[in-house]
Image (tube, rainbow, N blue to C red):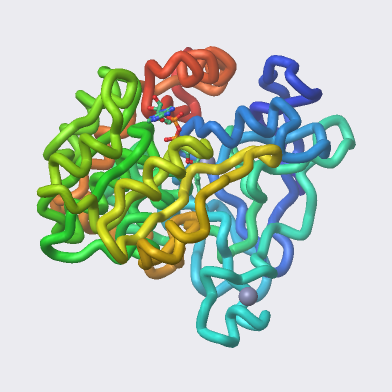
Length: 364
Ligand SMILES: NC(=O)c1ccc[n+]([C@@H]2O[C@H](COP(=O)([O-])OP(=O)(O)OC[C@H]3O[C@@H](n4cnc5c(N)ncnc54)[C@H](O)[C@@H]3O)[C@@H](O)[C@H]2O)c1
Ligand SMILES: [Zn+2]
Ligand SMILES: [Zn+2]
C-alpha cells in the first residue's frame, strides 16, 4: 500500500517551496514508516532549496523531527509501532572501516530507506535522507531513535540535527570539562546549544560572541556568563580580557566563516581546542601563519553532527530535558503549519528566530 500525504517539496533551484501530496510506500525490510508530529526548520533545508547541496531536485525537505512509528518492515527489532522516536541522519552500519575501528561517528555507510517516496511518479530526494516536513515519512529503522514519550515532540525533535550538533560540539568534540572556559562564536540554534552543552559539562566561564544584540540576549538564557558584541569590539581581545589574559580553553566556531575561524583560533589559551561546527562554503580559504599553528599547540577539530551517536545520545538528552537540566523548549521560537515553511525561511534569514517548528496537522 502507498500512503498519500501532504509534504513540503522544493521543485527547483531558488523556487519557493510548495505543499504537495506525495506518495509514501509501506516499509520494506529494515524500514520504518513514521507519522511525523513536529519538525524544525533548519538552514540546511534552505540550502537544499537553493541548490547549494546538490542538484537532485525535487527535494522533500525537513529533518529535525519527532513522531510515532506507524509500521515497520521485516527484520526490524529496535522499534515497533507506537514508539515515540526522534529521527536521525546517522544510522551507523556497524561494518565499515570506521565502525570496525570503534569510531562509528565517522561511519561512511549510514543507512537510509531503500524505497523511494514519490511526487506524481517522480522520485523525491529526502533532505539528509529523512524528509520530515510531511505527515508521514519512510526511513531506515536505524534512523528512528526511541526516546521517553513524555518529551514534547516540538522540543525533542530538534535533537535530530542542529541542537545535537551544538551540544556535541562542546561535549563530544570539544571535550569541555569541569572548570573550563569556553567561547562560542555565533549564537544561533547551534551556538546556543553549544553554550548549553558547555554549561552541562561544567564550564565555569561561557562567553557568547555574536554581531546581533538580540542573539546575545538569548544566549544568556542558555547559560552564557559573558557576552561579546563582535560588531563593536575585537572578540579576541575581549575574550583575553575575560580570561585573565590567557584565552579560552575551548573555542567553538558556529558561524562558518574564515574570519570567525581566525578569531576562534586566536582566542584560545595555549594548547586550547578549536571546534569548527559552522559549515563553510566551497570557496572559503583559511590563511594562518604556520608558526602560529605550531606555536600555540592544542587541537583544531571539525565537528560533524556533534560527533553524536543517536542511539546513545538522543535518549540521554531527552532525559536531561525531562529533568529540567536542558531547556530544549527555549529553542522553539514559534510553532507553524506545513504551509508556513517558506515564510519561516524568511524569518530565519532575518535572524528573528532560533527555530520555527512545524507541528504536523497544526493550523497555519
Ligand atoms: N557541523 C554540523 O554538523 C552542523 C549541523 C547543523 C548546522 N551546522 C552549521 O552551524 C552553523 C550555525 O547554524 P545555526 O542554525 O545556528 O545558524 P544561524 O544562522 O541561526 O546562526 C548563526 C549566528 O551567527 C551569527 N554571526 C554571523 N556572523 C558572525 C560573526 N562574524 N561573528 C559572530 N557571530 C556571527 C549570526 O548573527 C547568528 O546569530 C551553520 O553554518 C550551519 O550550517 C553545522
Ligand atoms: Zn559504518
Ligand atoms: Zn539541520
